[in-house]
Image (cartoon, rainbow, N blue to C red):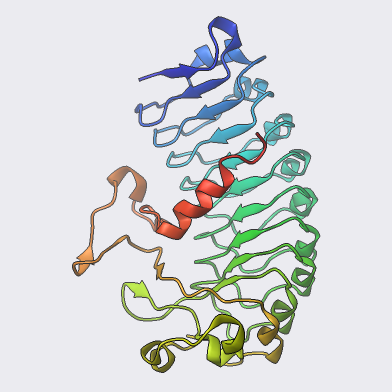
Length: 306
């Protein structure tokens, strides 16, 4: 069903065509190029974005998740008003350098795409506050990643990272950092200097559900956070991380929350539940069923840029 709101005729501002089995972008969208601000095309079968698509330069929110898109054209630079972009769960292999011209971007999710690196110009997106880079093929981040000084939440789960750039110590507004399922053995000391960090997530190697984060006592935070339960204190460890730097004790709080592995959605009764077959596409799916914390994160972004 084609849902259009907040306008009529050529003054349409919002179009929702999610779950419509689309194989191409509807051509009737072009007539709204002067007014369309929000476009939702999630969960279709789109493979290509035609050149006319980038005439929609009034867009503030664009959601293309759960499609079969293989390439983001250079013309993405035309979206100079774009505040929120979601291209997660596609087959995109590269982010074009021209993404640096989307200066208004505040919320971006590139998760679950086979992207091996971020373009050099990515760090010019100075207005980014929430960034999803889960389940990609990243083996490193740009050395000047810390230039994204307005970041509040960064998700880097399910990558190939072994270390983090020292410039991340400049992310003074960062509140949430997810490093689960990477190859990080030594937690960099500069992570402990992040003054606003309240959530630091890592994964556990066994079981369908990762255990909670490292207990507060082991971080030297018991006076600030309160005591963890005896069961948690005996069970939780830094899985795969062999060294914990003392500056971590400077973190203001480490939240104790449950964290689902991204390889499958987990059913509390003891087994994996079926996810949407259109989303799996014979490869890993990052949060095909989102956790409660992810929903909270999405709720926090809904009013950004409005």
